Length: 243
Image 1 (cartoon, rainbow, N blue to C red):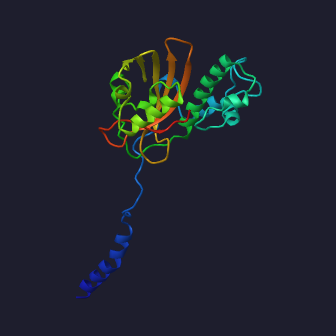
Image 2 (cartoon, rainbow, N blue to C red):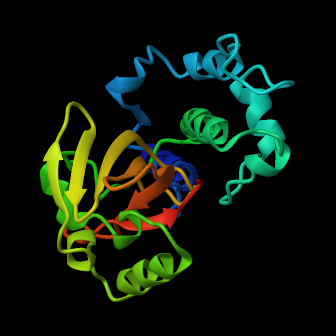
Image 3 (spheres, helix red, strand yellow):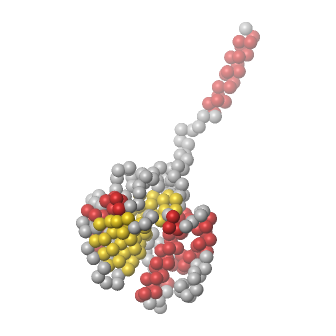
């Protein structure tokens, strides 16, 4: 009888201890999708990004007073508007074009540096080849005016894809993580630079750059987008446009 009472007492004492070790129902989800970098970057580790941001530009390729990506990003600011031109008012149009290309390269590294692993993804299995074109949003179509930008935004709001917005667009794969989109009067190279959570919502995103050219002139431009999709069968949408 005494042994039975002792056993009951041990169970009564241990029960709340066992309950206290249970994981809370609202425990945060662990990241499942690590940040990934395109093989085009030849990055061996994340720490190498810091070195590249601080590495000196080749002599004669940067404006006066700027000697690295870190300095260029600090001077021009990291916003959704291209404002380096106001920081270097005496720079020629051709040099500004080269400067914007350099700024884009630096901004890509900065975005990858700040990316974090994602807890969920609807793009993990997405291959970056010609078949991705019907999933791309119309904002990636070549943009030469504010009117064209407005029309692309309206098409995105209607749920249209890039080829629905511009039916002349045709894509082809051009090496790892790059497609080339040809259309009526334009050629665009669309490059996937990395995967990760670029806005802190836990969902995996894609960091994508466009290199835009008009076939009938000298127009050149580069843009940068963070894309994602909300469900496994949905189209990609623009989360933000760093450049």
